[in-house]
Amino acid sequence: MPFFCILSTSFLFWIQAISQTTDPYKYISTLRFDNRYQDYFIGKQEQLFPVSFSFNTTQDGNNDGKINVEDACENIVKYAIGDSIYGTGRTGIANRGPNDQRPSVYFHFVKSENYDVYEYWLYYADNDYLNNHEHDWEKYFVYVKENAPVYVRISSHNKFNLFYWAELLKDDKHIIIGVKGGSHAMHNKDKKGVQIRYNGEISKRKGRLDTGDKKISPWKIYSNDAGVKDVIPYLQQPDCFFHGDPVYMTVPVLSSSKECEKCSKAPWKREEWEHPPKP
Image (cartoon, rainbow, N blue to C red):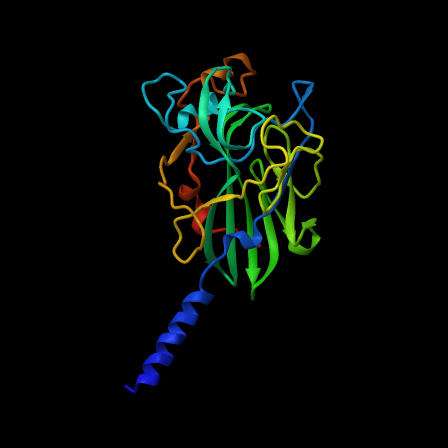
């Protein structure tokens, strides 16, 4: 084969590889949280923000002899965003940290029907609304056709609501998602509290934020997908995140007081991970 043909073929392969690179930052959203919400008829501020489920890998918060994700509720520091966070944990245990509480999202790319689906999964150490439980996963999926976003699915408790991309509020061409206080359910309405922008700019606005206000903390994007750029690989374990925790003994029976009770599947074990619902 002539040299120029080999060169041309190699060049085409290189161009193809570049064109197949997926950019997870392209459709990442701006999140705006509740500045006040009702919990047992008492108004309070949003306390927790999306982090990596491995934000603390050094402290056995629940004293079960193991250091794992089941220490999350004890170790997470409220009203704080940033790296190397120290403070009192959500359940009142002192000297927690250092915690990596930078904004984090778990990304997965899949082709479904006629769409490229950009999946964004958000982890919260605790849901402190009516049905209190440790570990809370929420998600939003962006459906792209011919390089243009068309639909967005946004999770709200057990629902997965569908919106046209064009109808959602925008922040520099990135969608704005409102986050309900405590439950972290998401919707298309604006909120007045803490804002985490798509580019990592953080502001407390009318909410409460003790650490991180007016800082820039670019989103940490975790993904094990091939061909996805600027992401952090992660260990897809555990497969189960248990909702129970002893701290919930003081709240209504809607909550579970046992540490390992009511298993919630990890995102990569759920049906919609590889088979997102049709728009």
